[in-house]
Length: 200
Image (cartoon, rainbow, N blue to C red; front, side, top):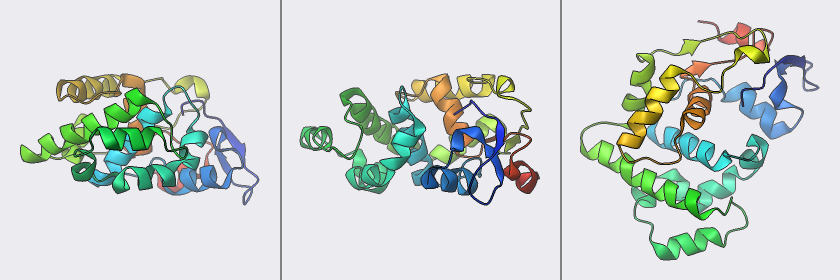
């Protein structure tokens, strides 16, 4: 979701990042979640997995399947998802409510197991990912879409570390979208109403 431009949205006539459009779910996501710092491991796991499922598709498609994903993946509880076996894979691949991609489903299960290993080692997903921004949200204010990169050195470094820890579907572009989503990086465009309300 890096193609941004500040433009008036029909809801409340507030200027919002152009990727939002007028879809109510997209508006709510932009206004209430995107760019807001998140440090909850389960929510971070959900965000990272959904960004992986989104690869090659639109975020709107994923957002409209978010509730179904949560039901199918046990509320994105890594401890439960890590126990999924072949029967669960078959169930997921037969579920029309989610994105039925075998590689992405397998990645979500593998990533839940990688998440559990972090916990077993005394760490957390939150501590790991936030370490790549020195535990502080990085506030950027792009003036135009051209100023928003596909990924940054921090996202590339996070991608390498997650892969080293056996996470999959976590390339630099996915990691950057995840960092934007979870508020590690705040990329609301300068003209967006959230840019003025969120500056810290």
